[in-house]
Length: 556
View (cartoon, rainbow, N blue to C red):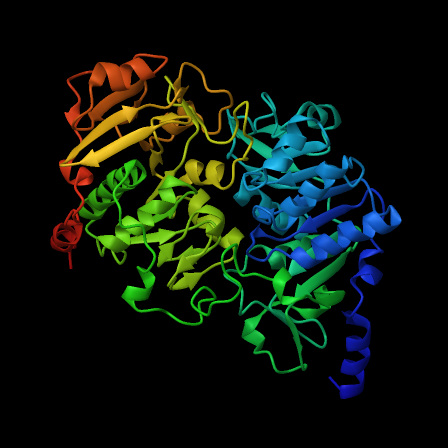
């Protein structure tokens, strides 16, 4: 490509004034925004879009779709939601489809107060959807979500009454060769706001400073697909000369990008807690002492749960005689990574996270999606192929409620609507599932973990083991039909899924079965025999010695 042509393209694509390109978005348009929390979230474009609306009154009534959620508390879409709520501004957004609202308490309030129509799909379904729309297909055909709140016989992924009335986003039940499937459809995006690290003069995007690839390419593809080719706007940190980016490093080819906007550094963080760290970007694989730095060394009830999950993963290593590949969900499950590092079994229990990372130590909280020392990173659609297809060996996922049948509610209560995240697709595919969480919830909970025992000093006032969950995020019927091995692991008790319902199989040493377990449930679990005691090593401050046991189990 000649220098004159490159210069001509650059003058059109590389823009200094974001308002010039963002003003092309019209009232009522569908806008796709990349972002797995702060990972690949174009915070600068998001804020400038809202500032443009405040200044001109346009664009308004936007429908926003994201592969996960573009932002974290106080950043990205949450920052805009806070401004909207404070102003009482109901005109900027008419609808939203994302996978996870959990980092925005404000958006959750707005959903409950019917500010706009709100929907939530699994991360995997959304990532696939962008790829399918980019391929010219109508949506995602899958069995994920059957007999759950995603099923059109229930809520069809609608989170409020406004969504149930308008049904801009649809889920249809289909029968193919005697089997039920769900078809997920949504309006095709007309504009896309995506993010890369570097753009060259013709718009080729590389993501070398980012934590992961996310769904950036697929969002661009969906926007550019027929029947109406849309506009892709990319936020980057820098512009490079054409030809200086290695072709294999280009994630989004330049012809798919219409405009490039260079963002101030403060609007382009790698993750919630990281501005830039070469380790987080995967440019440097750190030594073990760096990977374990800042790990929580104390032993509390949350780590007790993570340790009990780790023991199950170790049993899988022993069963198969090889390393196992595992997914860790947000919350307590993500802490299993710290246990694996502490026990030095991370090479035998390979940890993956929905953002696309393999190996290393997954972080949690708003930094979920980052893995310190990951050895591989896939795009989100490719990662979810591993999950939904059951390529992985097991998954540990969080929960908000569990009922007597073993149904799991992972994303909806009267006070919170975090959304499903990656939960439905992972639970659908993983052959072994270990749901992990605290037995009760609420303020004032206090535990003491010492001398191989658990003592409950004061308990939470919110019962999580209920007769019927508020919303079904994962169906026990489907899990049983698919012959999954399912455990529900808490700090004081462990249950197993059976065709008859939930069976209590273990209790923690030091716990009173009647007072601390049965009295804090809305139903009586199946007890075929006296529950065993959980492994006392879980409740001791020293290491559990898992590596020595597992090395012997590996068959050469």
